[in-house]
Length: 74
Image 1: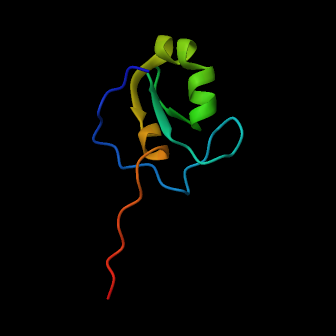
Image 2 (image 1 turned 135 degrees about the vertical axis):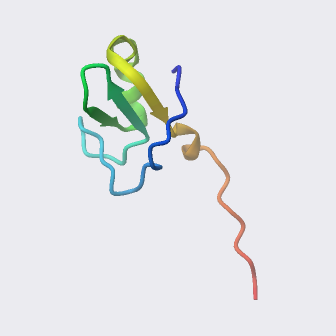
């Protein structure tokens, strides 16, 4: 998916997919205004249609495969 880095705030666990309610990893800013949030699954499923109507796409799906940060031991 082609993405644009936006100054928007990072997505959090409180951001939910508009389709199924799962955690959102994509924010789609629409050309017509407003935004849609999608989980990785629905973002991939609707990718062709989203590209047609998106002014910007904030894609944070890389967080799903990123290694967790190391925890410092005392």
